[in-house]
Length: 222
Image (spheres, one colour):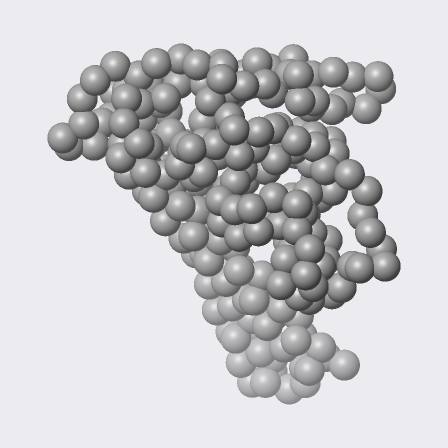
């Protein structure tokens, strides 16, 4: 195009790139803030006002109601949308593979932990769901968002026969720290739930801005 049109196109695309870069900086700062808070809270150098008492280390198997591993996907029942999510080990799309219309295996709230692929990643689940492909599901009386944080901070040896995997016996013996009251757990869990919501919103905004940029490029240059 003529020079003046080139200038306006470049200026528009530069503005979009600046927005994307700004959101990426925001994302980085939120992730760093989350890591700092996790470290401070679980080292007990940061406590919510009004909470005292000693945290105790317990094995997960002694604190869980149940720990189970997902089975095979029922392809005949699997739907692209529905009432109850079917969740696997993938980290994208919250691990959701599809949905069952009427069936579920685990009643929420619960925590899932990836047993294959990128193993050991915990996620709080508030609704009823079905875990599949050896995804681990943990039911307990603890706050699910607190438990998600505690498990994600834990590192343990994995069983491996070529492909790393996290099994029920290994995760059952995780030694985790728990505060003396459920109310403190809930306060911690709620904090990180809000932070994760902010992080997810920024992720989404970056994706939408990238899609908008691609759309503009196609409209202008195709």
